[in-house]
Amino acid sequence: MAAPFIGVARHRIGIDGDGVTTLAAFHGCPLHCRYCLNPSCLGPSETCRTLTPEQLYQEVLIDQLYFLATGGGVCFGGGEPLLRPEFIRRFRELCGPDWQLTVETSLNVPAENLETVIPAVNVYIVDIKDLDNSVYQSYTGKSNEQVWTNLQHLLQAVGSDRIVVRLPLIPEYNTEEAVKQSAVRLREAGFTRIDCFQYKLLK
Ligand code: SF4
Image 1 (cartoon, helix red, strand yellow):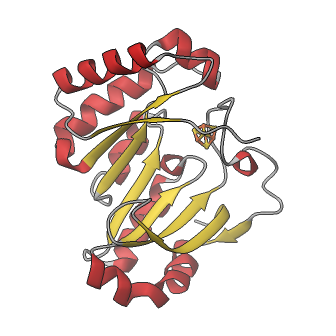
Image 2 (tube, helix red, strand yellow):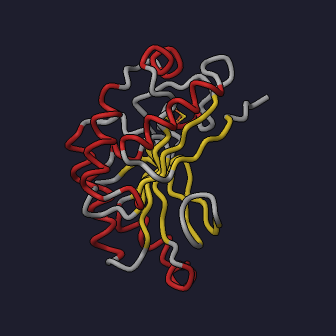
């Protein structure tokens, strides 16, 4: 069950979930966002590190004391971590119940991928780009129909406390007013942790 990684970064605090966190970033993503911050996840995978869940667990175990003392753990990002649901499930079996596992995801994945990780993941950080499908399609190259379906299912399955919905202002694609309206729609749907922010463009 080996998977390619674009990086493993230790000691991240307050960026990828609670406490001290190690970010494990998978290669591969179904989207092609115009301002992707990790374009290496979209290129060839030959230069990536390939790790099994067991190898990744052994590597990140060095920070177990930090994880347990701060309520932290491992954040799976990318790329799109929910393209690797069986990897994440296996990792949970290895690390046990006490580490906090977080995923940073677009949720634009098949419903069964989400279903597979639900028993394994504590916190979901969901970058939904934009709720308007025409904006979403022009920014990512793909429809967002599956995102809304998955979001609603996730809310039913785990509750709003464990879902952070990130709602970006995307230069040249949406507006502050559109972001505000999306936030209203999300609150009406039952989401309580909504993070509005602006994409910073790489020079
Ligand atoms: S979802 Fe994230 S990793 Fe994938 S293309 Fe968009 S910004 Fe890049």
